[in-house]
Image (tube, rainbow, N blue to C red; front, side):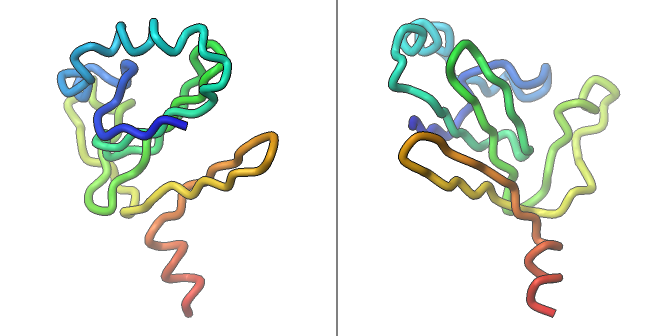
Length: 110
């Protein structure tokens, strides 16, 4: 598992101005590393998933405002989704992940 702040793969035209500067070198480095299964990153303020070769890349939502990578091309950056975080559950031979939103936490406490 590799955890990063900035994203190492292309996410959206808007957010990719903040991509890790040497992202291609990073992707080349992990290409033949079969022991790397998961790359987590934040900074994009959105839930995101893309599988590249054998590695799952997951972006984490923000604990503040959310961005909408899909809508950025229309000039809309803010998503109406509530703040959240990503949960990761590690098992001996696999992992699972889910996003928890503020509304989920509030509903659970009521």
